[in-house]
Image 1 (cartoon, rainbow, N blue to C red):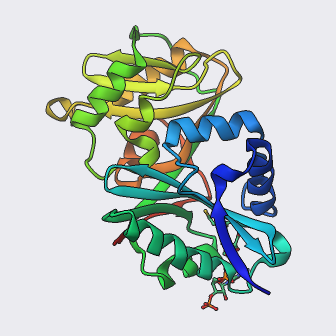
Image 2 (cartoon, helix red, strand yellow):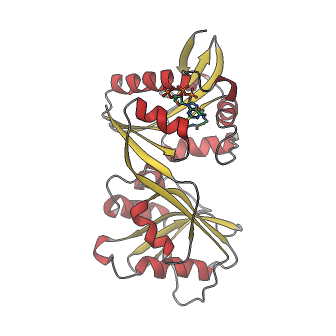
Image 3 (spheres, rainbow, N blue to C red):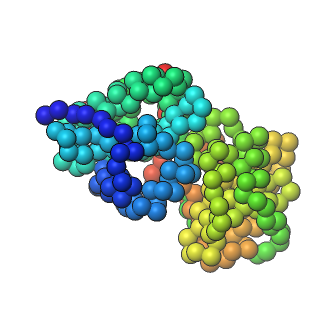
Length: 274
Ligand SMILES: CC(C)(COP(=O)(O)OP(=O)(O)OC[C@H]1O[C@@H](n2cnc3c(N)ncnc32)[C@H](O)[C@@H]1OP(=O)(O)O)[C@@H](O)C(=O)NCCC(=O)NCCS
């Protein structure tokens, strides 16, 4: 039995999407990655297929490690091993190689997020040296009843991304950074009320994701995020609103004060200095 790694860029997208889906079989949330979802991940998250690896055992693909890169920082965007090859040391072996490769590329830091309840994942990443930065939490609310009192002003998503880069925490999780948000395009939409800003997925769907919420530093503490979220709920009624578990726990109050309920699944944001 010999393990080896090969660049993901040598494989067709359809095969990579299929391998990722199989790598996440029996996961905490159902995962199905088709080609279009995979291509969106690549674009939004800056995944570099030439640095990403397909994991082979005796020449057969058994897993995948996706690596995203920005400047001196890389991120393990996903790592999945097919069910019958798990818990045999392949994950640990592959992670050690991916870390060596990141060092050899001259990178200084590697980041990832892992579901807190994912014992194998957390154990693996801590074993190879990753440390917890903070807990990331998610929220949900179904059909909140709010009357329209404030008008939302629509804005260019790209402008919102610039504001997040300037005013957001410097160590935001990858998916909340301005660099990620700049890759969102319609039908996603961005809105503001005064100095409070948000980005949401297509609000004509029954389920809407809140992909960013930001209040400029000088306007914090005045309840603006609550005004903004309530205005969203009022302007787009009869929706289920989702906040995926990528928000720093210190931002949780924003969602709690508008009655959203915390999701059972939370994540650890983790970092390794290379
Ligand atoms: C997480 C994953 C990548 C780990 O790969 P793996 O090849 O199974 O990992 P290893 O065999 O090297 O095991 C890593 C550690 O987790 C432990 N472990 C493995 N499976 C476990 C399980 N089901 N429950 C508890 N611990 C487990 C191992 O014992 C090992 O710890 P040890 O060195 O102290 O013995 C793999 O299980 C997987 O693909 N899971 C589904 C997708 C996923 O969760 N990806 C990670 C989030 S991005």
